[in-house]
Length: 173
Image 1 (cartoon, helix red, strand yellow):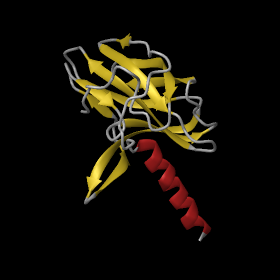
Image 2 (cartoon, one colour; image 1 turned 60 degrees about the vertical axis):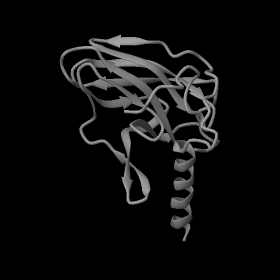
Image 3 (tube, one colour; image 1 turned 90 degrees about the vertical axis):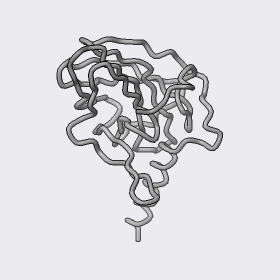
Image 4 (tube, helix red, strand yellow; image 1 turned 120 degrees about the vertical axis):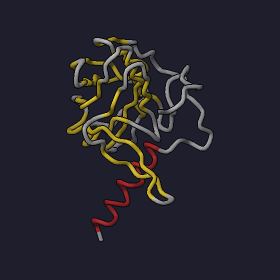
């Protein structure tokens, strides 16, 4: 019975972390995420949602643009704030959206922009070492198949945020 309640608790935390609020408004950004380049990749708008005290899972989001002529892929991510990090997406299973780990990484076709965001591709932070507090930030290393690794600073937005200010109008991939 204890395991059922623990599983239910984790499910509720995951739902809160990855479900848009009813208003679906964008919160003002606490800091502007820097635009970085790595080879032919442009990394922009990194952010994460704050987690409740004691929360052990969180999500990070970023926009990745491949300006080159060859495909690449995001194959992994790492950060000192979590024990483990996985690349995830949402898949419709009947009438329910379920998170699934992306096998082989997130493809970045040439000339395309992929937005990691709530309800789509995202970076799942598992085994958080402490809650992610709104207004703070943390380092995240993204590793690409061809472009190699790049470290980004990830500002933490409020719980329920749909992203930093200025991202309203961007559409998921």
